[in-house]
Structure formats: structure tokens, C-alpha cells
Image 1 (tube, rainbow, N blue to C red):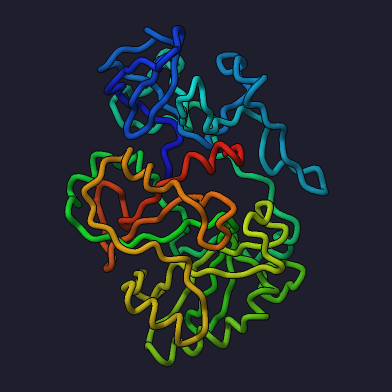
Image 2 (cartoon, one colour):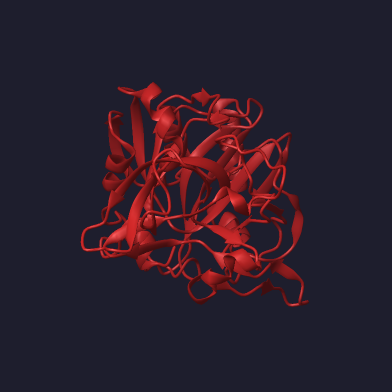
Length: 353
């Protein structure tokens, strides 16, 4: 699970050109703007990542004018996401700032102050989730199945200490698309579809994901993969198009781009070369490839590499880059599958992320 709020150490403080009242702090792999002199290298802080939704409490009220998000409710007036203060990427005096930090004094009495401690729950912080796009609702079968892994890559800024172990390791790079997450699986004779967090009813054609799955004949294609490659297959990808995240790629209809093929019996990704062969055999499209890279880069260099135009629409900035090894690696410090993303700061600033 993502640590939205955790105890971290300020490693560096640096002046910002032409800024008298603020400076930048290096925390994990992030740069964060703070009041000049408020923190020193070596200080412990409570660091809250972007996408954190801070509760409406007195210590966070100074964020109301710039960060407040009202509650999201459904047609029956049930609260889907509470109101709060959303932390997002901002630019101050030319410096990109990602996250916010607080003194340890905001923590409840008795909370561990060991570096790395997750204090998300103690502070009542949740992950901000944008409203569900029209057409993504409908009938639900249940929660996301436990024989699948969710599709949320860790950000490179949070694993700065891990990168060194993989120096000179080859990774594949793919464009991160800005859409809605989608999973289709065939396991023990059952075909199923999932959004990012839920198992949806595949027969409900009011749902855009279900309609697209029917149009692509995904049930038949997964059966072909099952018999041809002798696995219990699942595909995971991004659905983009009209009505989804502003349709940044200017598509006329929804499209699916696959980034994972899994063997659900083994709870394991297939190797990248085999994945390409499998997708080609059933006529499914992979997310755009950006080639290979030998990892010998700092976090800042990887973030800089993420900046560029989308292959699907060169008029817009790409969301970022996803890095994965050719063969699946599990890392104990990450707590699972080794893969990570670098998000394009120009994209985040333009689209208020």
C-alpha cells in the first residue's frame, strides 16, 4: 500500500533563485518547497505525497484557498469521497514542488517517530480519487479479486535507495497513458472484468469497459491465450478515449492499450518478450514502447527523461514513463513486483495533478 504520509528525513536544503522567503527541500527523491529556515538537513518531518487528501482539521486549514475539494456523492447522496485538502504538484518561483511536510508535533501522542513509519491512518489521510467518469459505473460483482494485483506503479521518488541495487540492469520503457485502469481475466472457466478497484458485472453494457470488452471479443481472445499458451490469463491495460480523463489523445471511441499479461495461477507476469508474442497472436495492442534503458540514472534524471510528447498524440505531453525489467523481479524493500514510474512534471502542472 502507498504511504501517503510518513516520517522522513530532510536530506538537503537549497536556495531557490530570486526567492527570499522559500527554499526547496529534498525528501526521499522529491523536491518540496517550504518556508526558508523552517527545516534543516537531518530534521525528521511528516511528509505527505501528492494525491494525499488531508482532513478538514485546524492544522490544515491554511490550505483551504488553494487545495480544498468538496465531497463527492452519488445519486443517492452517499459519500463516495469526503471533503478535504488535496495535495498536488505546484510550481513556486519556478521550482516544481511535489508534496508537503509538517513538523512531528502534528502527530498524535504515542505515534512512532522512526523514519519510514507510515502515519497515513493516524492523520486521517486518504488518497484523492477523481470522480468516476460517466459510463464507468453500473452493476458491481464485488471487490477487486485477490488472485490479481492492482495496477498502480510505485513512483520513482519513493525508491531512491532501491535504485542503486539495480544499477546497470536493463529495463523496458513504456509510455504511461492517462485513462482508466482495466483488467480482464479467465480463471477456472470464469471470465471477469475489473475497474481499478472493483469487479464489475461483465454483462452490464451500460459500462464503457464492458462494452469495449464485448466489442473486442475479449472472452474469446483470453480463451485462445489459455489454450495456446497453457496459462490462466489476465490482461491489464489502460482504456482511453471520449469521456475518460478529458480524452487528451483526441480519440473518436474508447481504445484499450495493454501493459500486463499475467498467469493468474502463478500470480506472475509473463516475460516481456512472450507478452508481445501473446498480444500479437490475438490482435491486442500494447502501450507504446519507448525502448530499453540500462539503469544508471538518478531520480532527477529519470524524472527529466519522463518529459516529452505522447506517441499517441504529439500535441500533448505524455503522462510519464513506466520502467520494468524484461523478466519479473520481486524486491523485498518494495514489497512486491519491481516496476516503477516517473511522472512528467509538465503533465502534472498542466492538468492540475
